[in-house]
Length: 262
Image 1 (cartoon, rainbow, N blue to C red):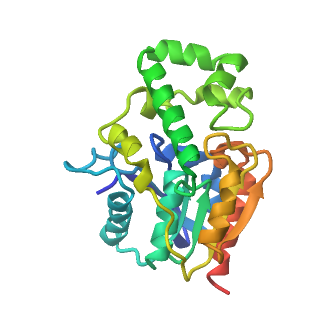
Image 2: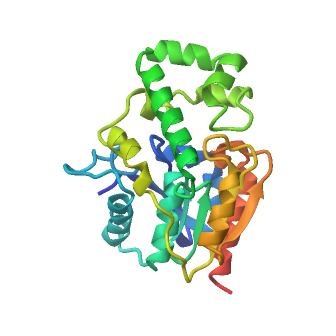
């Protein structure tokens, strides 16, 4: 079973992180979401406290989608709501297309890139991982302790890296600094992370106005592929909007879930 945490009460809501991240990345929005939902924050296979990916993992999103659906079955949850960021956003949209969720909120979802955009994401993630693997944890924390260091390390992920509360992101960067089984396979297979089909459930996409990992120009392709999805730009947010603006992110997720009740 995937590692996960459960809190709050109400209709179940799954939260799915991005590549190399962990479920604690959702901590800033949990108190806001718990007011209306039982929140299940998940570590994907090969991430956080979950077990490594299965032998033969091909790097595609499909086995990860099936793992999240399997967790819902294990927990006896029928069609939860779901919100995901980056890779997690792609998983959320795919689960919506498969009809296995009641609503889906995708934050800067992967899979809508051009070949150039895909190469950029691959180079940025791969390059950052190589640099961080050569550092000790002490050096990482030292760099994060200064605004200049945070700008250098975090500007592709968050919109305001100089703020003091980002100094504690060393744990969040461990997925890049000490990548788990499957990371290299996923990077090599990014061309298989293709846009999902249209869905028949409320679907919302939020894209940070200052997302430099997956720039919001990718919204144009998303609108062509998923014309029924509602798309909003999240002002002042980067690639991980739950860190930049928890209130705005939570309201987007809650509002999408409410649409399923109309």
